[in-house]
Image (cartoon, rainbow, N blue to C red; front, side):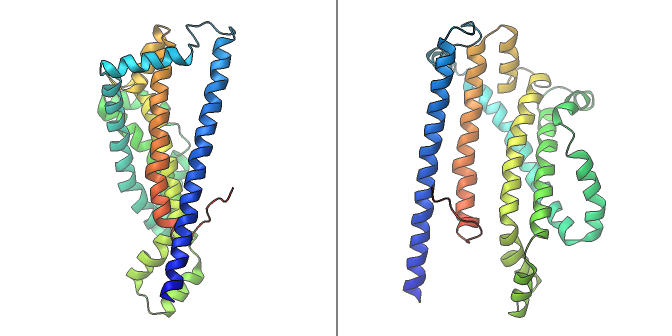
Length: 276
């Protein structure tokens, strides 16, 4: 039985690794195709060169900004604001989502607030938060926290509620106490929803930080760079900043969230890997 289980585990790991490799190849093909299409449009003459620079021009600008250190500084400031606000959202959103699903009074109190506040765009709150907290890191971090908290909270609540009651009864029949039910059944069962909520929250955190930096940041951050470059028609600088945002998002999605997914819900057999 041990050899059979080991063989099954090895086969599962091999399948997961093959699926990861295929996903990277598909991602590379998609990115290359998008770049080819963009370069074709940029060289077609439909748009002025100042408004749609070619890829070599954007690459040269990006390289220059790396050399003088400005791109690194702007990226560090933006990452700090995103990760700080996002981490706070995880600390608050996931526990409250669990409490909402486990205790009816918490659900009755929080669910109307979540339903009312989640649709409000974080960008619409930037001017108000600027009046309350001023211009700088604090306002930007609070905006990121606001944007990221509710999707995480809502998905966690949905995931815990969706755990199969048969699993709970089976675990209880085998003598599992409340603590073991929570850590061995409820959390693994809700993990696909929780990880989806974390991913959605991270995306919303980036949307929020770029918008907030355009208005509320002092002089550092990728959002501030994009807004400032627009005033001088520096499309190459804008596109360089967008490339950095896209690269960070891609790396987090593939390396961080993908690794978490492979180590949890794929390993536990909660979802299947794609075969094509």
